[in-house]
Image (cartoon, rainbow, N blue to C red; front, side):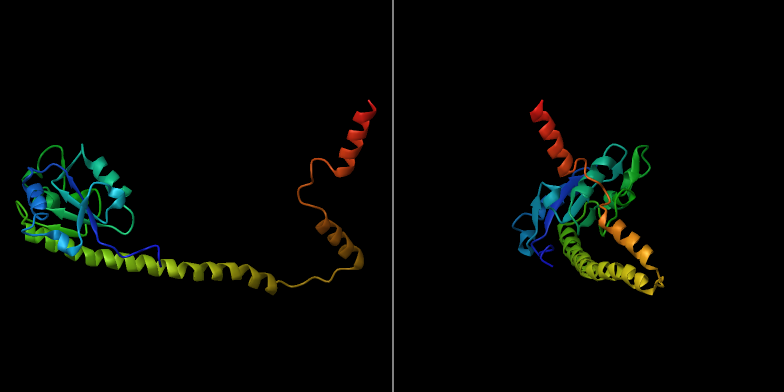
Length: 207
């Protein structure tokens, strides 16, 4: 289907509550040394244009709504990658009073990158593997969209089959004429007929 066009994956990055160690490694992936763009991966700032959601840091009571909002704004299909031990399970901040834990406590996660801080090679490997998950989700959506019209046609044909199976009643001539007259009568009568409009107009001119 043309609705799901294969393109270079775009990544949106959000820092939940990390120490910025993993964020520096994410930026290192964009440098010429690691050159993540050789896979066609581009870092963008708009979640509505992104295919991969890269999250660093743990999720707490203050930013859980933002994480959900970014995830919901991303179009389907999409992939979530948790970068760093804090994004995976909460890390050393897991027992803090306001920390809920890893990203999977709020949104579904497709790939985990443990480490403190996570190495650029591991981040790139997780994103590339996430592209396989993205393609699998895309194929599933295309398959579901192709099967939907067939299901609609089957549902549309069911009432016709039921009507055909109903027994027909033998009616006399009078009953047949009454039914024919009822069919001629519109379900919703008009507010004014043409005759009434003509009479009302002539009365108004006479006055």
